[in-house]
Amino acid sequence: MNSEMLEALQAVASDKGITVEDMLAALADALESAYKRMPGAHEFSWVTIDPDSMEFRVFAQDIDENGEPTGDEFDVTPENFGRIAAQTTRQVMTQRIREVERDLKYEEYAGREGDIVTGMIQQTDSRYTLLDLGRVEALLPQAEQVPFERPEPNSRLKAYIVEVRKTAKGPQIVVSRTHPGLIKRLFELEVPEISDGIVEIKACAREPGHRTKIAVSSNDATIDPVGACVGARGARVRMVVNELRGEKIDIIPFSDDPGEFVTRALSPAKIKEVKVDEESGTATVVVPDYQLSLAIGKEGQNARLAARMTGWRVDIKSETEIADEAAYEQVDWAEGEWVVDEETGEQVWQPADGGAAMSVDEWSEAVDGESDGSGNPDGEVEESLGTETEPVEEPAEEPVEEPAEEVDQEDPETN
Image 1 (cartoon, helix red, strand yellow):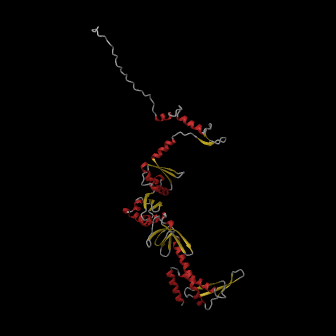
Image 2 (tube, rainbow, N blue to C red):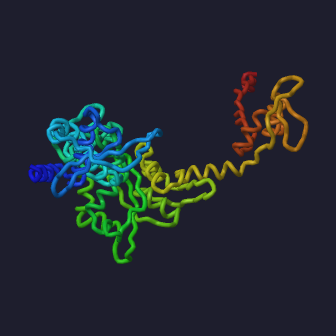
Image 3 (cartoon, helix red, strand yellow):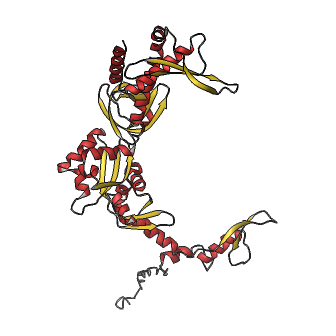
């Protein structure tokens, strides 16, 4: 019977993926629990099992006043221990086998945070999606799902392991479809140069379901990192795009120069100049007027992805804006500040040079006087127009010819 029990334990251990030593340890704990339920059992006792003969023996020790074992150990194996063990061992053995299985499953996935797994969709609702990974199930929360992505039941899906939790019911594996690490792992599967370490993904920025930007570099001068990721006729990157359900991917070469890196990150827009301020961490980008909308992108998407990937605060300005700012800086502005007069409680202008304060009315009059030195409100307009007013000559009136007066002359003949 002992040989039959050993064969049964070996069969169970092989079926559950557990070692025979763990099964024997679980059996010893079950027998110890069964013995302590018997009347007259010693409080400090344990069970030993011979792995060759499968013989069970129960040993015990006496306990002193402090509850510590004392004296020599002695054999207290009951005569009918085999029958009692057969009745009480099954439940404890089943529980221990489940605990060992849970521990093995947890150890299998405990160190795999950051890996990619492939599972079959089992259940989908508004809160989460369950993926069958074989021996365990993975949880895909709604927050880790790509917007507008509708996984079909019984379809295969790749996901990124975010966290592995140890619970009373077994390991709980949380996976994600929105994590940027999913992009890196997918490229490692499709691009052998990345898995071999020849090509590296230096930076990655992603808006799940819409667009992704990655920066790549090569440790071998003879290998083009962008071409290796794209593949022949785009075959490699197309496989990644298909797995992401049509998400667009921009691949750019990495650069250690911040200005050059920001310029490449804003592609396909054409950049005229990049000014980097290391103290504030801001990169001011100057683009032609007709490239401003392309550099910013739809709803600012291109600028956001470039800022995330480079780590710089990207400020995009057109050439016209830069010219306006330069003209604004050249204007000679009055130096001072508006303060409240303690006596009157009104706001007054206090010049920076320590001059007398001016009220709002005095300030307005001074500004009007500077704009028109003659005091004529129309003078500012005339000066701004830069024209001189000349008197308009009125056309001379043409003389009117008066009719000649008729003179009565006496006819000499009549006289």
